Image (cartoon, rainbow, N blue to C red; front, side, top):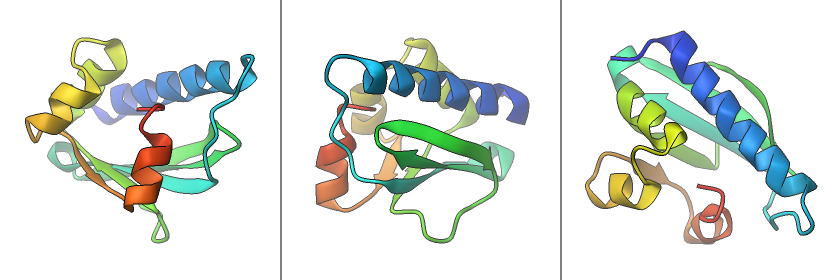
Length: 112
């Protein structure tokens, strides 16, 4: 089981990948949203703000107004961010749960 420090680092890796996309030729077209990542095996949640394609203000704690919530184990979070587990495989197998409106899900699917 991964720890809180490893999970926060994994989310920061994800944030840096999004930064690269946003700075690229064509930044992703995403709405400004609050994203939460629940990690049940650690009994914690990390949240951040997605603004203009950048994931910012990542910190531990649940944000009550989150429009997008991801739920997965600490090990699966690391596996996804390290490329050992694809998002689609994690989602299809139930290892990743996404709670979002259809519109938000479609808009951010390319970021996941």
